[in-house]
Image 1 (tube, rainbow over the protein chains, first blue to last red):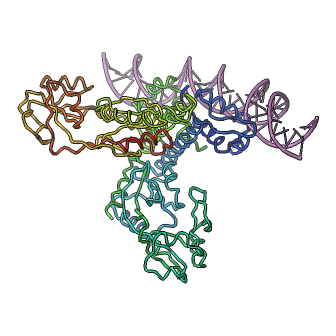
Image 2: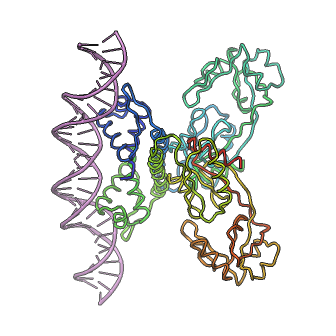
Image 3: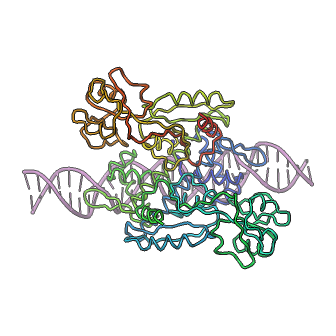
Length: 284
Length: 284
DNA sequence: CCCGGTGATACCCGCCGGGTATGACAGGGC
DNA sequence: GCCCTGTCATACCCGGCGGGTATCACCGGG
């Protein structure tokens, strides 16, 4: 009587995200009436009203908001259990593949050193590198698609993970080579935000773009192109110098917060292979 | 085809903990055959062998160990979703009860200050204080029985939680008043471990007692009694002075690690009430 | 006033989760 | 060697419930 089934959570999360029973049912590959009934049963069993059915659509109650957040976390944990179990059972041995999530746009120098050093360890596990977007490592770790990640504070929040600090670096402004500001030996943050003819590029934050005049960036190549064309400016960690184009100029930023690269993993992990990788990383 | 039901997780965790289908079935309140079948189906769906059925009992495979850990986490997250949703729906408002887990044996000074200060806040939520054992705050936070906890590093691990540091204090040895060592102005850790006639009391650690000659402690009153009787000695944070008996003497320990009290909460929490409590605590 | 679109209700069906009875198999005691 | 015991697996049956289709109740808009 008190245990939520994952099916119920999946249903509720779908409805809470769509705020529409019909679309949610379609997304779930089922008809609308059983979905309505399932949500009603869920509300009755919890003894709580989750949705406000107004004419014209549906709204979440306070309890509904809570269940949406907590339910997503629970579903992630369940997927993680399935995925990690499958991975562990793959080839028998206790030493198994480890999935490492890294930003596709990040410098590969540190990564190469880490992989090389770890591969030299006596009984190293196989490392699968999973390239991902700018801010999705936390969700990859939570739902089990990855076991460990390289994260960059303060861009990624380390909340909920164990982590070990690896390197710290400053940040640079990447400007079109011909721009007047590119001649300066150093700049401040204030110098590069609000340049009238050079709006700061906007990265998607969990799929949604912050407001502003700058172009919306979808991938690093597109950004590099736009900078080279003199259309925008971007801020990156020092290590981004490794992929600059001929038409780019990097200028150090004096007052930008330092970027700290961490290796991070789910706090409850108990894997030997992971421990070995972390130990290796900490020695770099 | 790829989604684990919580029922399956409950079943597997029961079997993995009991390592015996019959006992697990009894614990689950069901018959043994359907349980066997459910586990077989689970293994088939995951494509992974979870248990080694030898004649005379059952053993976990590597994948089984993984599923036991990850499955427990997923079940905790699911229970947490149910409990927190129920709590949020209780009395309607978005401001709701907040459950604060504190060690029953901890000093109440800090707690009182915190509760008083928070109650004075403009729109404070109702705080329910949940007294718990020495090391169960993490599991209370994980399975949703509590929303926030006072934890004591280095005794509690803060892994997986967000936290804010509150106070730091030294540690004292609590000795029988008449004991020769009680006359010293200060002692070192080495002085109070291995006293021939006064073995150090042993606290249960997640239900299991560390080996040693000292008495096994079940609650604080019992411990106080044993110290007053001259049978044992214990180490506590400074604030424990507030509950000492007449027959006790507290002696500062010069080289014991400092005890840091934190307020900690699940990293993904988004509750306004919680934010207010943390802000209040940080100002103390 | 009717129509379109919403979620809820009514009713039916087939699957699957659970129970009971029994089997297969290996140790241990006599 | 025998049987007895304790283990997990198999065979079979049944009832509940999860899901589908058809339809209703409701309301806002042209």
